Image (tube, rainbow, N blue to C red):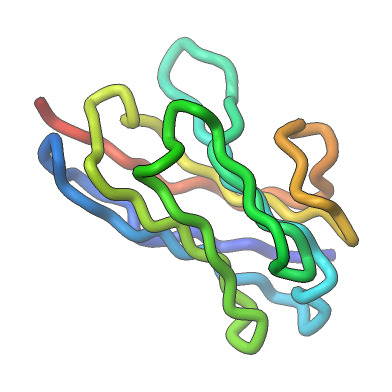
Length: 124
């Protein structure tokens, strides 16, 4: 079992920045690809970004490319999502997820463990 706890969400104005963190409970954190997904009210959960277990590759949804950056610190068992130039359409609950030995998939069903989510609200 891997427990994931997100933090860093909040209310920000358009154009602002937030950094989300996701802390994992397992010392084997480095074996997991990590992903960020989001779900807005009335919409399906969608892929945001992912990073593979070896930290050699990152992947982004087109809607966030150039604005968001995913990174990880395996020594701290933490993955981050730096979000810049935020837009109202980025408003959602953001979830981190873990995929053992994953490559960094955009498919939610590939992930084995999920956090509870953190709310991000961008005001216009």
